[in-house]
Image 1 (cartoon, rainbow, N blue to C red):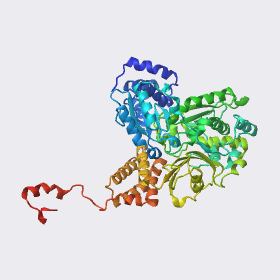
Image 2: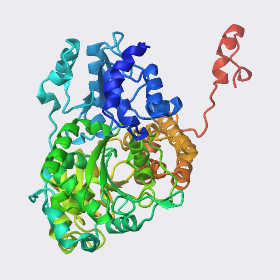
Image 3: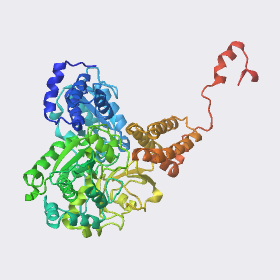
Length: 609
């Protein structure tokens, strides 16, 4: 392993420490910068980081070992991570990855002997509409084919800095195919805030309540109720209330932009082209609940958006829409800070996200208490999805009744769908809630659709018999993913891909999920190799029940969905792969006697078993 001198590490860390407060909540951000500088986290750096934050070394090691984008062993100067989502595999990801490895003389998952390059797989990069996709040192590579990989290999061999690569390699299109009130109508920055200040905080909360807006991240909790709980929360620490300068309990607004569900990329588009709308929704929320600080938790895969998002925030500060005395109101100050994730699907769970925001491993907390009363640093915290805050801005501007008039009674407004897979025009589609799956398939040019994975691996798989079902909380709720599969696709391999994803992303905290996801993976691999039996299917059903009822968080409770759904709706894909015998000995005793038969010249019944 590469060794560093203490003085070298100190020189590297000094400017990094200068950019961050001496607060353990900055630990993950510091580690990300060290990873960038050294291509891994050196042991010597861990010692100094632990001393700087006054935390045990084991805490730093724990964080460095938890996130997939951090490594305590060297990775290549050019670190290429191919998206391993099922839609990327359908587009030839495995073959393309092997092709690039051969061009660069490196084994998949390893570092080249000269330390120049490493090539490996990673979970979905949020680029499913323009795959096969990959990341190189955090920068997106889209629409990969052999020609592009030839160019990439040449650039790496010539040691050309990634910043100097041809821009066309990094082009990421929004691919908005259908827009409605959220994406298709103009928005003037500040309009929602002016309406909120004119209306009043309580009255704005009443409008959000009237809209019946429900969270767009998947759980569907009523937004107004969450905000009311946060506003009403009383925080106590050692018997005394912790208040801000105005005498109110300190509160926080957090935007969950850790869009890790495979097949989902709507938040990427909102952040790229509608960031003002999102930040304005966060600011409206701050006024309603009484928060003075907000965070955008940006998934590591979207790090390339950081600079432009920081630019949007700065322009809002200059326009009086963020910072002190917003729009001239001395009683309203609020600002937003961007916090980077580092490749951990579990951080999409709100309490795990808060743990990560505080600089720790993203492990879901025991609940209750919930974040609305005990969130970031133990204070009342609203955690909402990117799309939710975008909707809030529109509601604040146009009113709750306007929003409630769209969709269905239980699912008001519109929904952004991230459509990928076997269709002519993958991309973002905005529909009023209540639209049928059949209509969506027609609009995106689905080719002989056979099945659709709604809301990603943790959601619901539907067969062609169910295409008249509707996108709505009361029928098919979704965080946004909508993956289309033709009849020619092997639904067993689709489920197997998802099972591997859950096994990889389990945080390992609770036994049912840690062990259950690994057992699922082993059984699916066993079936894929041709050694599965009917008893394995029964075991997976039993495992599914354990995962659903005994897991600590939503990851474990939904990890069995791909298996259970395919077993129910496409049982033949399993049956075709099973061995004919229910039991097969692990050791062929009769075969082992073949040598003895030859030596003795016997071939009678007594010489066989």
